Length: 477
Image (cartoon, rainbow, N blue to C red):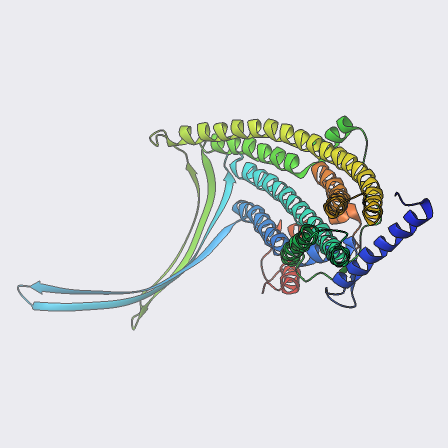
């Protein structure tokens, strides 16, 4: 006999309360006293990520390439010093053998200033700047990966917590079914087969619970790796990110602002400048050189004072075809990166299309799962009541309960997948960053360090002192 409407509502409310109680019990096993929203998870992942810190350091290293190249346009001054002992022994037929010795101390300063190199150093500086910009985009891409992984970890821990709660509730219901089957067996309403079927399902439920608990432990370990700490009481997200419904418009946005596209564009610019560097290497250089030096004889009266200044012009005549090969190689690398830019654009567009397709499928699965759960609950309650009247077997009840369990598990997964898919769309657009998400963290300013080092400051300068303070703040000194 099917349940009446008031009885059905009461049964559904009771079932949901049992699941909620199980879920609260599992949540209490996490770090006590701390509720973590998805934003809290993302803040921790951003602040604790060694991968982000690694790529920030690589960006600072790229910044220094600009300073090192710029130094080639400035005077290069070196000091030299040496102590030389000269000894000789001479045989003269008239006077016999004579021995002479002299020790000289010499010191000097040499200087060199590049006056002209056909723009080679300037091209190298601009290429280094393009590499810096490309490395900044790499850092943004890494940031997106870190945050998306944290989102997946957060949602998967919640998914598995709910799975454990669902399995625990299912196990309790199966124990009730087993007790009912045994009671009915005692009065002769069912056979031993019905009891055995209930026992088998209860054992299978125990196995399923153990597997769900194992999956939860793995999800927690992934959370610790992705976020940098254990999860607290994870709070479900309250709303989805706002997304455009126009996929073509989204693809255009991604092509304009995705870090992978921007990075490869800067790589192409750097490669084009590398061709100009290789071309300038085949032209002459003009350098201003100077030297001053002093020399003293130890224990003697001899000394020297010297100085020189001049212009040096050098240029290649023949180097075995090496310079031409370097230029052709630079051109080939430029062409390869142009091809990579085209391919990257296609991949970014495909990624946006895939992300939207997955999101649409997730929405559809969630809606279908909600309807499946509703129908499965009605069917389960009806089958169980019919079994009490002898119209259904114990196996029918167990099958209906298994269908309800599968439907509820599918709904949990579908709800989780919707959130993961929505944030994956943001990542495909290049908009899954701490700044875009308004996480309220102290974001890393990639221009701050660059502005300090781009002029290649020396340690004794004002800017050099500022740089020392920044390095100490970063813990790098």
